[in-house]
Length: 301
Image (cartoon, one colour):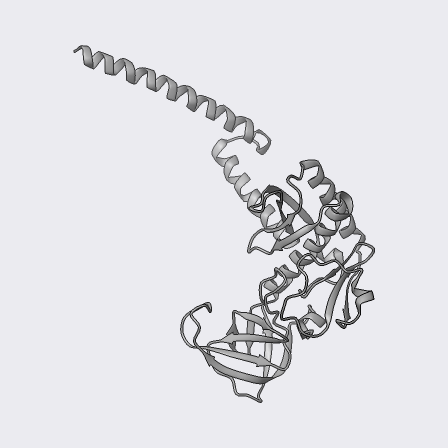
């Protein structure tokens, strides 16, 4: 099934009828207290999957902080019951949704360019709360490679390539042959298959929510790499869109604080810190010498 959130990722409010509301007791669920499973005819609240966390929002005035997919149904967990048959108003935490859209579409773009330029496939990805990552099938990824991928991605963002969604039936083998998929379909997948297309760049099977144009990503910043727990693989960390601006704001704040403490221009921070470290090392060495001399003097006395 393709949910309303997948048909229109920009929809912030929606009304739908309650099909199921059952009280549940499961220690694995987040939060304590009474919990109710609510299934609606359709939903704009994305159930976690494909490396993307679920959406937060409300059913009427009841908070929803967990949504999971169960076959072709989206299960919403709430703390108050709803009446079966009633029509409820869904509202979404838009800031969280748009952030996830930026990071997920950005991941598709990064993965496509790493594959196109260096023939290195992505094996998995993770959308973190602050930083996201892709895992690539390579024991290393140089700074030169990182810079090249970043430059190409940002040039494509500036060009405003369209991002579209095509939906195919599971029998459309010819159409699906051209679509990339690192994970493959879940074992309990039911119904149609979505393919996310970045104009002239990529086709990828995906259940997540995405932007409609690369310009909505604003900017991509590749951060650093580290060895994966899987032998021979590398983790590549990145930020997209508003997360880049937030990181820049924090960096400027830290820079301003250091400028006050060090009493020098930001361009001199590194040199001054290095000088302070050398002075501290010299002082510690001198202190050890004095302590040894003092100990010897006390021993003689």
